[in-house]
Figure 1 (cartoon, one colour):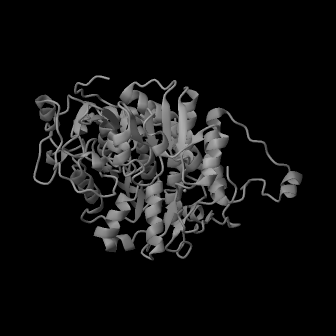
Figure 2 (tube, rainbow, N blue to C red; figure 1 turned 60 degrees about the vertical axis):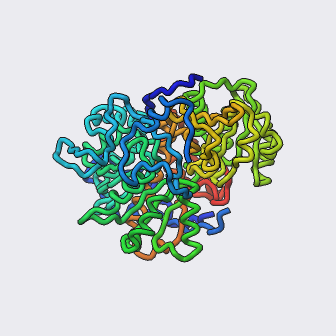
Figure 3 (cartoon, rainbow, N blue to C red; figure 1 turned 120 degrees about the vertical axis):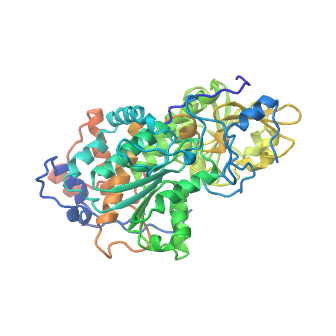
Length: 552
């Protein structure tokens, strides 16, 4: 791996009871036509299904190798309090010791977007992106993504005549990629007003943010934000004179946390929250347990279509992409430890094993550990193998999974990265000490050099590897995005009293509907039950086909 500093452009791209009357939303939409004369209205969409609460228990200074690197490190312009290297350390998804490298096209000027005055072709300036002139390129990226998100586009066409989200004001905090843009534009087509920001400071595709801003969506995000920038962008999305959000779509819980803490009056008027990450769902359960959750929330993360497809199949492919792009590592014969054997861990292990890596697992859950053993993996404690491993991947959703003592014992060249949403799994803060030298070798790749010359390769500063360093499969994101859109429609249109101040799951019928929308891509044909068979099994011929306790 080259040790010189190099800029590179990266093309970044949640048991509930099933109630009897919760069958119709899939049938309603699947029966709808694109015609504006459809007799199905938004109220019927909301009444089509109901969800019930889930159980609440959840489970310095850096030394530089040479003056040139120090100069490169300081390239970004600074303003008081904006790009301070002495950042506060918290557990938010912004925790980072940013290398401050420019991760955008070298042709872009390095002026902070906050210092620029930009307007789109409509004369609107209510946005803050890297360069609005990149909108045309971003539009092409979105069009490419649409080609592999046919189910979400189908939902858009079927429901846009009824405008089920008319009057909704959605504030969102997610990764801003071409795939997310398709979701945002779908929400707009269904009648929503949207304001958006990024949940990760490294995953934003600047050209996509520009394309969304050009079409009128207020986007506040760019790749390589500082911590101060991150919270400033969230605040700009929420705090707009004459505009008040009534729906939240979050990924990680930072937006929900900010509104709850800074704008309590706005939070009390929110009609629903949709959350898609383990971290964000955990925060919602904490609020609910403390009696502080005053709005209903949908846990999308634990829906079957999110767990099995986004978490498992997506990570099975994107883990290799992220590692290859950043390190050029060959996996055959490499000793890899994957911390956590949940759906993300299972996906990572399957991919690594297929390429010949020798994979070990660390687990706290005996059921997951037994699954790992039956899948042919050795279950170990990290300290037992720390001196021999070549790659360590965390995907637990926990904190301090890899600590400084273990980092000190790793062998030279060990690669350390995280596949969890938040950057709390690797104790990166402990590496910010005078005796260690940080050497930036590639975008999102840092060599941490010990006094004896040992190097540990840290990827994305401990942040989410796949979306920070590579891309994720568009088709899988279509599944999650469709679930998110349906959850927003349900919460926004639900009659008063249907949902209390708690965390809910979408009903099984909804998961089955989302899956059915994606089957035509594979030319898959479902077998239909006969009346006799349905009666024998005690099922409705149109589903749901599995009880809520079923584990796929």
